[in-house]
Length: 174
Image (cartoon, rainbow, N blue to C red; front, side, top):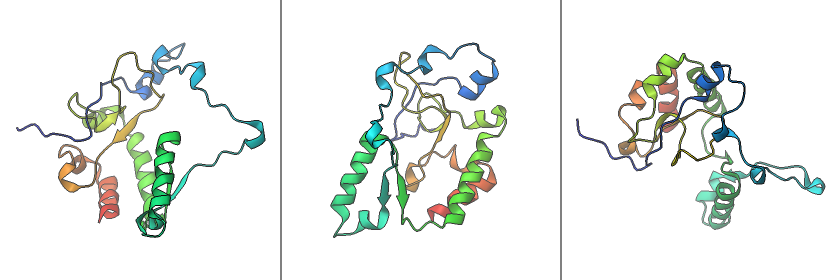
């Protein structure tokens, strides 16, 4: 079978934190302990932090597009995530995908291993963007998958998903 080139890159494989937690470890492994200088310092005068909100309609508009693009850039750079509003995906579908995603993470590890990342692809179940054995990691497992453009999908992932989540993702993509 011909190797599929994945534009999302590669990631070193690491153990699942769900599996590590089941081992009844007495201390958190050092690679999951973030150093003191990485801690968030909250100014008492301004202790209310708000997650950045990006408006898709503004992002696509001629009038507000560049301002919203700047907000998106800062959200990605400073926070690493944001809330997207006015994206035209129904709230019921968003909730359905969230529930089915949780169902996926609740599957037995033997099922999730079918979606494990490979050394050649970052996509799948595991951790993304792991580039060295010394790198500090978040105490979390992820499932990373490219959905669009369609030609960038990994053929071993999308069609193999459990039917409920596959169908919901499919609906959100059309």
